[in-house]
Image (tube, rainbow, N blue to C red; front, top):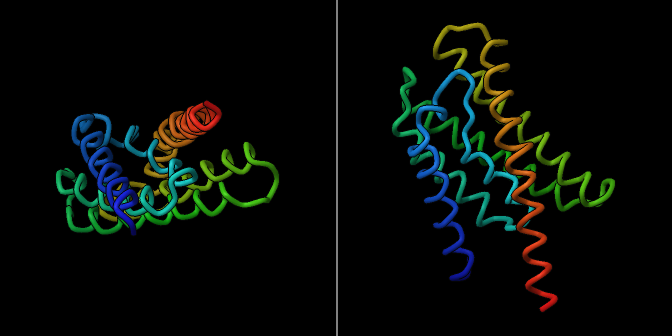
Length: 166
C-alpha cells in the first residue's frame, strides 16, 4: 500500500467506527440500520482501502457491542464486513451486465452476506429465532447498503467524473 491507500484505509476505518458509535442507538438493535454499512459499497470505487478500512472499523466499533459475546461480535462482524465489501468490489467491478446493474447487484450481495453472517451468529448468541435476526439485519442492511451505500457510490463516481473533466 502506498501513502494514499494507507490514508484512505485509516479514513474508512475511522468513519466506520465513529458512525457506529455515534449512532449506537440504531447500530446495535434487532433492526440494525448501521449507517456505517453504507461505506461497504464504496469498495467498488476505492477497492482495498475501503475493504480493509470497513473491516478494521467494524472491529473497533464492535468493542462497544451490547451482545453477550463482544469477542464474537468483533471477530465475526469484521469477517462479515470483509466478505461483504470484497464481494461488492469484485461484483461491482465485473463485466457481468452493465456498470449500474453490477453496482446494484454488488450492494444486494453485500446485504445478503451481512444478513446471513451477522444474523446467524446473533441468533446463536441470543438464542432468538434465526429468521427474526435475518429479517431485522436484512431490513437494516437494505436501508444502509442498498439505499444509502448505492447512492453514495453513484455520487462519488459523479463527483470524480466532474473533477476529471475540469
